Length: 430
Image 1: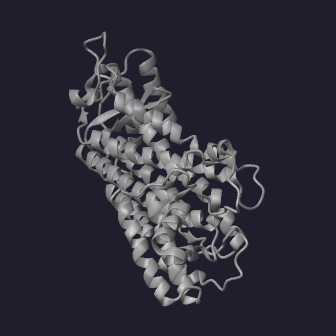
Image 2: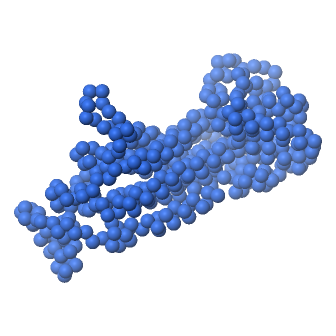
Image 3: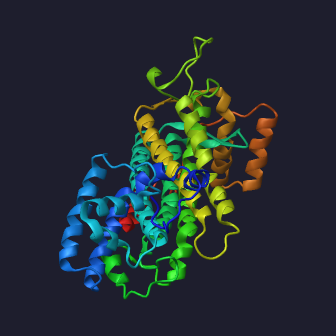
């Protein structure tokens, strides 16, 4: 069944190709389609396009459909094109002609737009919650292991002393930057396109502010053409935000894979959280973090996919835009799965103590000793040359003392300040 049916049926091959995977993906939009429809018919009644009796008939029927969706009993019937058609078909079957009235003053273009805006709004809040949970975990670990030193690297060569407090805390703060991007995407999504119809408005006297208030959007997309142009723009903002979080998480996963390697051995996990080999009985592989790294790398391709899909489209709705659901829906779900899995794994992380006692890391203290001499009055360049010559001649003996006290360093992790920064961002999602 097509809402646009005018007395002819499309070729089945054409229908299959154009509908694609949409029926399955649309199930995720079903509850939002009902929410948008409820707001729309309340507005229609307020401007006289529905009677109070018709509204009172439609509302319980839509709430009944919402209940089916909540219970997992809703489906799109064979031959029905999309979720919008299914819901209107169910209303018409149950109520007769009054069910056909809910589409007055809107198009499937603004209908799917409002569904997607509501979907992304919720999905971004779910991502924010999952990211915050991991953030809290990393902050706890940062404080718990604040005094355990580890090597810091540049060019994958030992460089200067670091600590597990710094390492865990670095990824916690990095998530706050990513959440700024997530918040920006949320604000772009949280605007009401309903009433833009096919992108050029309606001759009905629609009350767009009323539907904005009912659906709790920040504001309408005021210009109806701009509302339609937000299809693709919203997805690109969301794509950039989830790619930023994925980049941080993928980087963290790579560190864990490296630190679990026997050549490092900085962290480990209980045996049951690792996997083995079919031929090498000693293996305890970091498969969780390798899969996480791979998924996050794939999520980072999302902005590029969206850019290529939307790059040369003319103004107005184009069917290409339908394909964005194939890209976005799995990506947001996978990111939430990765964030939740990272939080689960880090509940069980085992951190190695006294790593820097190994003579392998003697040279990591050279900068500390240069700074010590400079603090005692020796010009920095002379101190640098003195320690450098000791290293060159095999005469260097480290003091193994670390005195870092400035903000954000080993001795001053700024955990509370980072937590406050995150809370300030999270509060703006409400």
